[in-house]
Image (cartoon, rainbow, N blue to C red; front, side):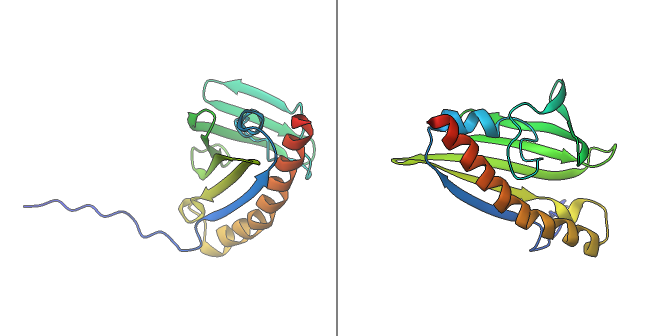
Length: 153
């Protein structure tokens, strides 16, 4: 007898992928993207956010958007980091991954956010959340570019 376990079918709209070119060294960009929750802002990266760190979890408090829990899932400096954006008091949330790919004129910064369909909410609700994040990642990657290029001089 063979036990066959199949992975759950993932909704094709479950994932957001975005990227941007940044004229900065990988270490400069890594200094930003390795910070849990740097993307929670008003379109400009907060250089000194209010955070509490407890092991692999970070609680970030934004004056307008509220409090967010994030767990660092994996970190491979200076090219890859992944965070779980936790919802409410649970350990369920989307996975946010960043890749830094060096090239001659700087780096390509890529982000993927996935797991919307696994949040345990009706499809209409997570699609609405995803829709806001599609635009949000374009804004946040531009903020990362400005922040990193300013520090690169």
